[in-house]
Image 1 (cartoon, rainbow, N blue to C red):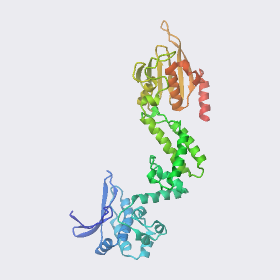
Image 2: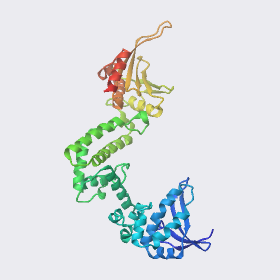
Image 3: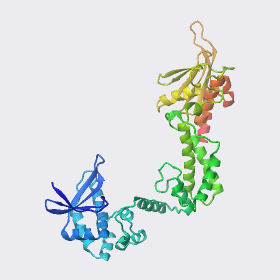
Image 4: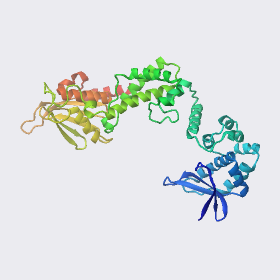
Length: 422
């Protein structure tokens, strides 16, 4: 169908007047179809409407704001309710200000669109939409609308931000959207407040110094340890609250999130050896008493990997890579075995526990070997790393400090329940 543009503004998103087969229509893009492509809607208008649209930006924007909810109602594939759209033309474009204000108190309309185009927010809130549009501009400022909605959401939650709270959220880039990954954006902060912001950040950095967030191979090669995160978050948050007691909870959380996310990024970007290696266990380390020179890694799904001291990496680094590649919700038991010495450890990720297994007597004459199995509890990934590193350095004997070790299964289950209940 031939379509000629009759009137358009510099901002291409504002509805355009077109002529189709001799009929004037208003055309606007809104929403998206099932393939996420933008939808375009049209509905007929008259010459008097076109004249107002061309000369009066405020009324043009008000009509757009009133029609957008009808476009939203059409969804991804429905038709625009043309009768409802046409019914808005006279009341919005040709009525007096008082009648337009009264109409906007009765119908749904897109507030953010008007705010983005410069409407006076205080007047909008009072229902004086025509007066609010005296400051309207063709150019849009989407950030202004986002800021309004962010402030409104906080007000609905009863959150009131002081200037320093707001500055901290802007510094981390999380003022508009709480789900945004925090960054350091000093240019986003009022220069008068920046020194105070940096004092808060310095407090957080001191609290997190010396703490780390390790990787969690149970959840993949780039996943990080949730417990490490929680420990750092608690330490940083407590320090910031002590030093700056007037800060809002949201401001404290965003600073803690910044410090933790940076620590997690460092862990993900660190070389495997640097991130996983225990002191003295790296490639080329001499084989002292109990030190492992060859190990076998296995899982519950038949996976196996061999490690040798002559290889390029340490045993812990190779083992945790094996876990990261193989771990899954139905594959949570991993074993490290020294076949030569007849000892090993079994990690139970589903239970925060570990078993150390030593051969008491070799099998002879067709009899099965006799093993001693002892169970211990571990504190998440940090505990598992210590146990794996200790076993690589000195075998089962090196695990004594990480007990208590329990041979009785019932005693072990009681200990597990006590810790779970605690």
